[in-house]
Image (tube, rainbow, N blue to C red; front, top):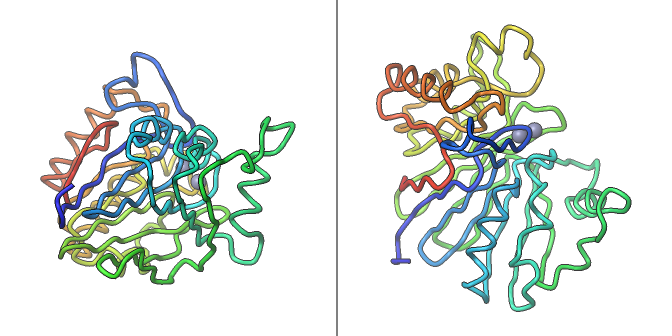
Length: 277
Ligand SMILES: [Zn+2]
Ligand SMILES: [Zn+2]
């Protein structure tokens, strides 16, 4: 990786539950997992089922030193964690971060409870890499290296969630999932975080119509709200993310056309997509 190179690669773009099959093959059925490279540094976001494929490729890079940031710990964002092969290489170091838990629990407690018998056969103690767990409060600023700034903001989601903005080499990338909007009252935390951003990856689980018809209070947003937020904040490019598992490829193609008409240059996340902010 060239010094100064800044990319994001999508390993899982699906919301709620992984879905395989011919109807979802083009956009992909794995749940949330992003790989961000800032020159020499690797930042991972969420460990949905997609992280297994990322791990299978990353093992060749050992020794690895990387940070993994969780938006939150709902199942679709952590389910791939035990299957991330670099955790089983002793020469690797990973710092795991979460900002949504408040004083309810630590990230370590939550992940250890998730990998606990009889729900799961082995505890995180089987990881051979050096894995450390770090709690912060959504809204805090983090700094994985002197050249990278990570800003955060609380999102509106059951049990909480954290939105992220990464600034590196004069460019910026935002990752905002899972979050629900309030019609007519754009989320000030989000507007602040995405102001002038180059790339905004946003929870577009539903259309406005689907959201209004039976999904209010479920903790997710719409592509129309994403467009409104990006316009209001002067953000440059929208990435539609966290696709509903009931949205097949054809449905997503249709949404893609509508988003493009509303905000030209927008893009639908799909597995394998690589973007530079
Ligand atoms: Zn989710
Ligand atoms: Zn969630």
